[in-house]
Image (cartoon, rainbow, N blue to C red; front, side, top):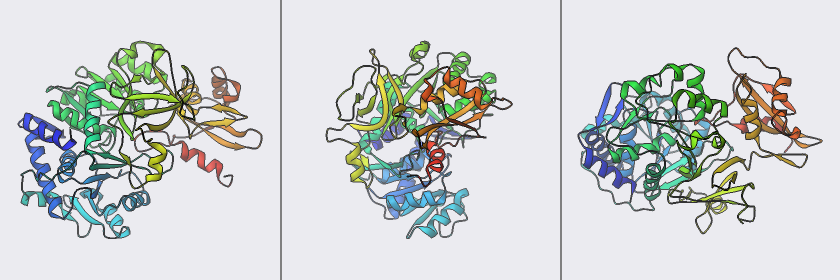
Length: 509
């Protein structure tokens, strides 16, 4: 099965039903499909062929889904650029991936023009009027294009997405998914996380570039709606649940924390909500307790990676009833093989820490244009190294310990930042925390914590250190705790430990 086939089947089955809602506008399945055909014909008419890479500098909007479907139908691989990234990062991505055509929001014309001036031969296409010079107005061009499906011939192995990881490690990695692997992602979501029907609606506030966008096709082929917001505003986000009859939401823990901190989670009408899916980063236990108390058994957690989205493992709603499992990321997805292995690749015992590896149809094909990194990550037998450290209990529940690259070795002992962060987050004054290793002449590395306090809360660094000491071994207690206004996050809400760690090591590595 190909991803483009799923688009065609959904359109054929549910043509007159509403598929996309954005503000006070909506598009039916037939209208989305026709718009996708028109955009695809524009792209083909510009000379783009199967495998060519098209950059997308777009925020969530009415045309986000038709544009993605158009790329599938034209056979091109889309290369999304998060609009929040710096121009230098975007230039690196465009050059490294070989993008020659960039589609941008009209409002992002200034940035698009800057990119065109720095990337040789970059052609611009705008979604509506723009300040960028010589950009083709795609919305105007659509009016002149055919609404018939171009029926470009694509195969299972043809690339359809080149997605850069969020950058928590600092390495520029472009994950390549194919027509087949992206179709398998839809099957994975339906088999493990949600089971939408014609009365279902998923709310999209996080960027459709990342995890939120993987839910579009599963709902599309079941006749469900995509309710798209321009972005995430914690004060108004949950209002859209009642206004649009939303049945499922997908959030990262950072977003859930904002809903609690603003009081929105307590006052909102979520009676239509059946499932709240969360993932992408660890959920602090105090936050999980508060959400469960307010919303009841609606939560489903997934663990996955850009290399293997969306669900490598799942902690389902029934699992959330057992507090003993709240630190777990669940059991392996029904369509994934998961193992915990030592450095030599041999399986480790129950309760022992090792690297989590996965083999699944939804795993990436490769890192684009990087065979050496691909060979380091994907074995000849198809097992993908996640570089996440984990352990498994006797019931098959997985618990993530940390990233292999984030582990701190102090005085010969291993310290996993996540466990120290969780101890800090248990303190009622702490809103966010990040723990890294700093150079130390005695211990080689010292545990250093950065903490952001809740509004109006106070706590001394001594109190915070004692809170950790009460829960963890002495060598895990931070040697230094810095109170900061905010913890740096990636565009998808993951803590950027690199941004805190690298300055500490300047001149020492």
